[in-house]
Image: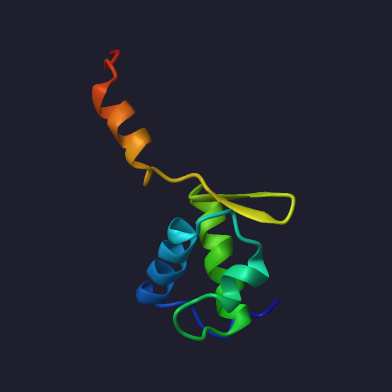
Length: 85
């Protein structure tokens, strides 16, 4: 697939926020159709590739799972953990 252009930071942030704000793990199509503003599908795919390469998301079957450190429970756990080393 030839990349026509790279996504802008605000587009990446919007898609990442949409994943975080989802009440359940969305599929690609559910996420794409539910975005607050329209994004070309090729751009959307490119953002998902970036988020997966940076280990912020993973795919389970067809669902998108956020794996970044944005969870309040996880953040509190990490803050209260004992640092080794």
